[in-house]
Image 1 (tube, rainbow, N blue to C red):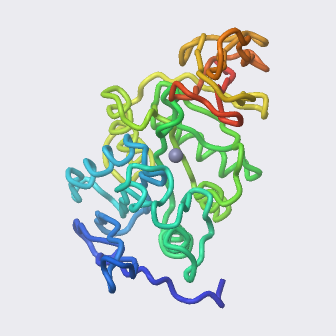
Image 2 (cartoon, rainbow, N blue to C red):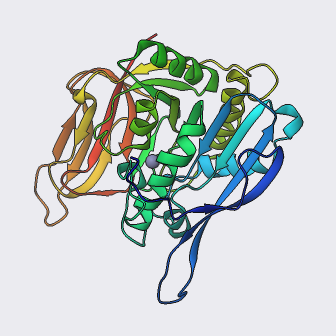
Length: 333
Ligand code: ZN
């Protein structure tokens, strides 16, 4: 770490100053239309004396909206006299992707959540990852990173944390998930954990919670309400914001193995036969993929490898071989 060069990102806010500051993480980006231009990533710091630090992020993927909606709102409304400690809000982490409405950055195609620990001398996306890795994560006691399904997936609304080797750290993370009070709470495993922000935070020993609150490249009234309530609840639970957690009932889900995930094996048009949140039995048909090149072909059936409920589904009507078609999670309670 010590032989890495300094981050090229300059914050216009002082993370140790009391009060509310709205500013930018300015990342130099020289290009055709702006020789000495920069990417201006919005950041808000709300601090009131000593206490824990919460790092709140959305737009890690640029086409997921509950997080940015809840966090721009929180930055506008959170009163420092209700805070004890520091709240750092970055509503749109991968800002170029957020501005383009795409999962990955239009500049370098970087998927921020596969770019950690990043590089100070790498691509724009790697430079953003490096800044979080070396500057922001070390300040944090608790980290909440909002996700949704983006343009290609849709989820039952859940808050989640990972099963961890350090059981004390895991317990704290699940307690924060419980406090978030989404309709579902998930003990999650990852398809592809290398390079994730989650993994970077967890390896530093931070309490890390994340969400999947919907998807389809937009948001819904219900999922935005869940996000707004959830972020305040996590801050109250962490003792950063005064007041009691506004508890709502939650159903715990478990994703015990790779059998949760079902992938398309052919291109075609998807017909989902189960809706989100509905119970499924092992071997039940979750979706059919119909060939679109000719009439008369049998559909590929996507079958559940375990029983539980449908936690996520492919969103657009057309699928390609290899796309995640459906995700089944076990209902714990
Ligand atoms: Zn995401």
